[in-house]
Structure formats: structure tokens, C-alpha cells
Image (cartoon, rainbow, N blue to C red; front, side):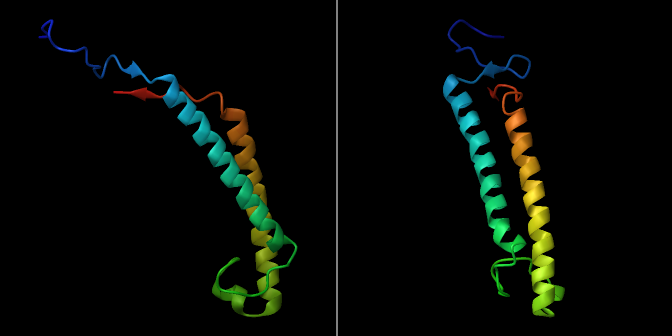
Length: 107
């Protein structure tokens, strides 16, 4: 039972909508995710173009890739293409759905 002195607190049945600041944060987060995906796509281009020599820091690092130079370039070109396509699909999905997400709620 509530008395007049208690502040109105949201319940599970009646959540309170977040402020406009929270919506701004949500929009900013959406664009950050899209930007990260775009950077990932850009990073895949040197792999596709076979510009990355064999190393242990950048590229598809599996045992078969280190078997020979040819294996390294073949596997990284294929992996770069997959990374580029998946990144492009995620960017498009992020752009298409950016206005569909429900407003943030607290409670």
C-alpha cells in the first residue's frame, strides 16, 4: 500500500520511458556499431588483395595458412571476402533497422 509521502516508483507492469538523453545514447550506439562494421570491412580489403605477408598478428591464423605462402594468401583472400560480405550485410541491416528499435525503457 502506498502512502502520499512515497515517491512514485515504476513497477514491472508500468515501466517509465527513458529521457531524450537515453534515446540519443541509443542512436549514437547504433552509429558506433555501424562504424565498427565499416572499419572491419576496410581491414578485410588488404587481405582480399593479397597485400598482407605471412605474420602472426593480422589475417586468418590457422595451421593450414602457415603451411606455405600460397596457402597463406589463398586462405586470407577467401577469409577477407567472407569478412567483407558479412560486414556489408551487417552495415545494411544496421542502417535499415536503426529506426525500428523500440525506445529504451528503465525500470
